[in-house]
Length: 633
Image 1 (cartoon, helix red, strand yellow):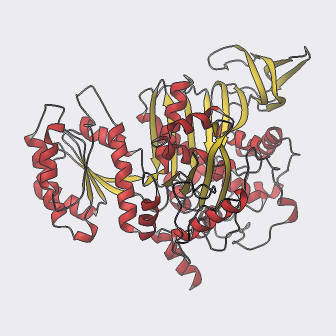
Image 2: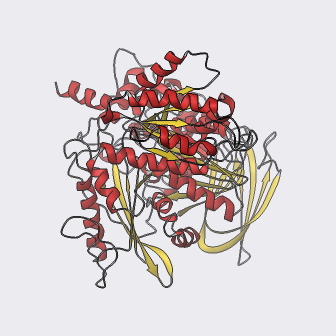
């Protein structure tokens, strides 16, 4: 059975083709092109057609019919596919108002359910909010929600109080212009379901989910999250004829990409009995899914992005949060200009060494902010022990070197003890989430084979070891009896490339005062192939500017195996806030030759292809349109 899955991102549209090879589902091919729902194309299906044509050219299969639609099921001549699914993270998030009885129970559970999709909770209404009926009514009307989530009442619990709030919502929705009425999701006392449907009949669509708070001590979010995904699809279909056409072709509509991360992390944490964390820092939004002791929490921050939301990221985390990851002085003007240029041209990539440090300072700050925001929502927030980390999204997987991707993960997530590092360079996670509902067997096969890129195993020293003093003693014993011994100094990384498929016994002893290896003084573990990373740097973001100036280039060289790229000493000079001494190139300005190859390249591990973009990346936000107008005027 063949499966085609397409993910529509703010910048890129990715497609993967999956088919049965030798009795198991395997990734056959993938393609990528620019998303085309923004200026000047303004038609999402153009990008879809491009990526499917490229995929067809690679595989020799015809995927679309004369009408431009994906052909399903697969024909005897191998044209078309049996299943077509779609996911999206594109466009602004749904604005939602949450209505419930008690803020610490039903309202909080509804908020937690909403974190699993692209929703911006603009207001909450509950019995303890000290507002009058008129004020609550105005709150709904003036927030212009795309979605209203109603929760409250445990099973066989409160009814009349819930229906009073429902009547308030019904009145507000009925008085809203029919073209922009919000959908309603009810996730409260199930005994009220028929009354809810009757209340909104003929007014607006209502989706019914299992009670998010069946009892005071019980929480059930999965059904509500599924209905939120359907509300996302309804919203996209209603607002865009392009999405309506794609929804009609897809097996289960257009699902939010973030839901895929929840699905994949749930599978991995339950089958491998590990704590698993996956994250994706996108152009407009960022996603983090954490599986801890069998519980999975997904957090989405729609204001943290490296392209469309670069300026919003800057405002959210603050300039100093960016500076702590830079090895040079920088003015507020230069930093703001760089973020503004990213907003104007989200698809641009760094072309100079200085730009690369700036780009990854924004990336690191976004990851830290996302992690800090997500941690309080975890049922076990005290844990910092993840045995498996997965990096996804072009910002992390497209840096040109797998060792550098691993370095970015270690810098920001700061795992302890022994951790396996993976990346998703082919956008497979987005596909797996949408496929899981229609062909779960394919998801199992793909995750149990080498379809996620293995970056290596890291051995991480916590604490702050003294610089250039012995911190770790490492002994690697190979299958043939040969051994490698290395003393790793504080403030440094040691990377050993173990041949793929070869086993080795690794013994690590902590000799740094006050440090630990996941709470242990020594670790002995058998590993199989790949990159072994021994990290004795302590806390990278705690260094002074002068320390970062000398150590960050060294870390990159140690992680990638490339020569050290020294920084210009003038970059340490205090800059004048009224001037921009290091202006960023805008779009087409050529880069210096010695900066074209910054950190090498990583070899692809699956068949890949890409298309050449003929249109700029998606705009999709009002502030981007304003900035473009100001630039052109």
